[in-house]
Each structure stands twice: as structure tokens, then as C-alpha cells.
Length: 232
Image (tube, rainbow, N blue to C red; front, side, top):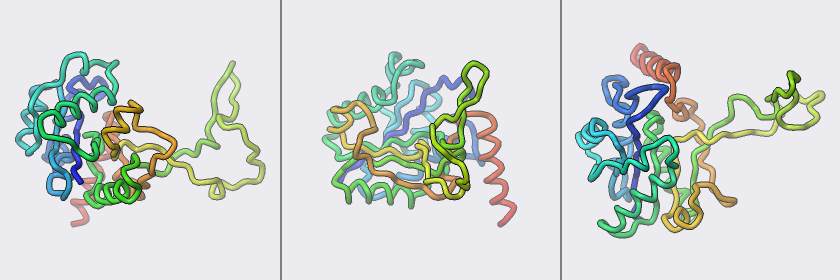
């Protein structure tokens, strides 16, 4: 099985400028996602799609394939991740031949483990190349969330929770952004990573589900790494 790992890293982050090459424990953030898949059997290449020359240079030094800078129309706030993935996939298959799966790794999930990636690849093979997406337990259960309409709060999910303990609610999960694996044919046909038969990759370790998008997220990531250093 040939899997193309794709790391998408746009240069124009507004909430956390320069985050993709910002140093996390001495390593540029993007390299965490490159390094985790470099030596995994079946991963034929780690391709980075970026519009930023500085990100491209860091990614090349980390051993990734960066043959071009992303076209300007795919580097706007309106460009979708699917369009970016299809652009990279079409280029790669046109030059290097067909692949069985596209593994999207967002650089903002630095703590995903090699074991988790291998588990996701195994699910992809086990379920005959159905799409696999990483999930983690929802921190706030949707049945305990509220909306505000005309200055009045009402349950976001209509249900009768009288007498129901929080621990007795059905498990709820969110897409954590750490792992997306799809066949090229499904991505081209559906133009989406989501479908009715998507296979869940449940990631139990809360650390692996951290998605760095704000300064607070960055501080949390740094604090976890510092705690690890203090333990050793």
C-alpha cells in the first residue's frame, strides 16, 4: 500500500503569526508532523504544501518533499483544505504514480504519536480503504451546551435530562484534526473527508488531540513539554 502524507502549512496565520515554524521545544512546529511519519512503512513521501518560502525551507531541511509553492488562489482565507489536498494529490500522482491513500497531517497537532498513525493506517487497510478520521472525547458534552436566543438560554440539543447524571450521558466525540486518511477516488468524488461510512480513529490520549491555534494553545503545549522535562 502506498500512502502519501501531506502536511498543509499556510504562512498567513492571523491568530498565531508564524506558528508553523515557531520553535516548540527547540523544533519548528511543522517538523513534529513531518518527523512522525518519515520512517513508517507504506508512506511513500511526506509532501508539504505551503505558500511561504520560509516554511518551505524548514520543511526541506526536515526531509520533506517541497517541490513548489502553493498557488496564490489556494493560499487565501477562502481556499478549502479539500482544494489544497486535491492540488497536491494531482501533482504527486502525475509525477510519481498512483497512491492508495492521502494522509492529511495538520501541523497544528504536534503530539500525535507514531503508534496512532500506525493504528489509523491499520484501520484504513482493515476497512478496505474507507476514510479514517481522528476523534477525541468531547470536553463539553453537546447535551450540556446551550444557545442564546433573544437573551434567553435554551438547550442546544433538545432532550430531557431530568435525573440524568453527567457520567451517564452517551459518549460524545469531536474531530480533533490530528488524522485524516482517505483514498484519492473518494476525495475526488466526494470533495470531502466526511461520509456516512467514515471509520473513527479514537485517540484516547488527550495530549495527542491538542490543536495549536492560539497563544493559549501554545502555552499549554509548552507547559506539557516542560512538565515532561521536570519528570525526567
